[in-house]
Image (tube, rainbow, N blue to C red; front, side, top):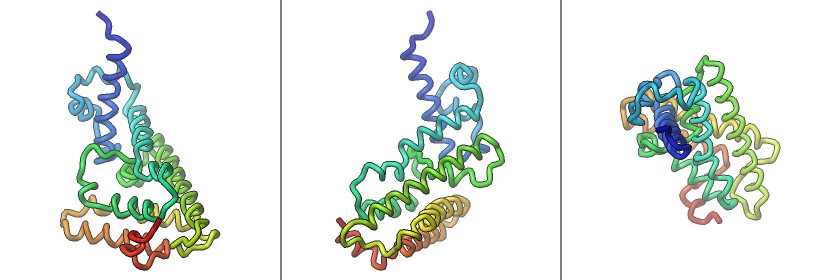
Length: 212
């Protein structure tokens, strides 16, 4: 008896969910189709009924992570410096770094720096440009607010957006290679403070309490 369309869709979603979690934690090169199917509790042969290649799976996983990204969700939040700060402090957090089932496009970026696969590089660039633009648009909106705590001028926003994303991705990438927990935490805290400095926020805790 052939499987129903609903069954096929659920099966594909299981594979995609497993792949997204693995790619976010380990990157493209360190994840195999066999590992994905094992996590999904399915046979290796079932993979090709849903995806043509590992690259095709990576692409769909990437898109799924981007939709659920903490930075992406920022678009839907009110224009508030408090929400922007929450993104930074929440993402640069060891607990979040070690959690499974928390896929994000930022995690993809931190794992696949310098990957030579053509498809991976293409997706990497697309995600980078998307996130830089997201930060840029949000910063422009925040600077137009009355009594904005941001101390930045309009012309510097593109470069500041690049710098913020570089701090996020760089700190995550480096911290994943360090075994000493104290040093990992120090890297993330330093990156967080640098981002606040880029934004011109002198007293982050006080700003968070008073920001609207």
